[in-house]
Image (cartoon, rainbow, N blue to C red; front, side, top):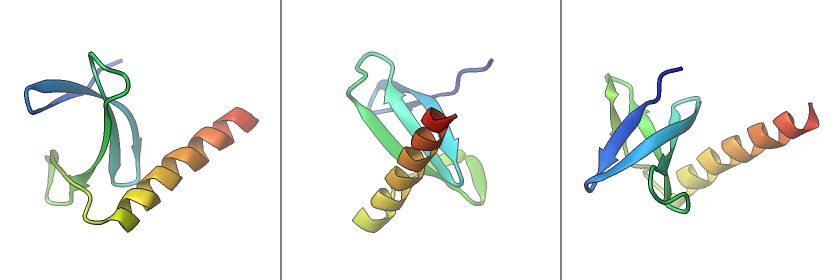
Length: 73
């Protein structure tokens, strides 16, 4: 299994989930440091910040719903 790592502000973040256009990352050295980014439609190596609180809530809801569904199985 390949591990995807992105670096922001000299910190390495590991991809732990991808849902739709969103990528969920966790700091390699601090599990409380997490972020959500979205893939650039024109460049899949580029991650973009979320545009609004509403988009953040949508991305968080996607992740929460998936995790709840996994627990039901």
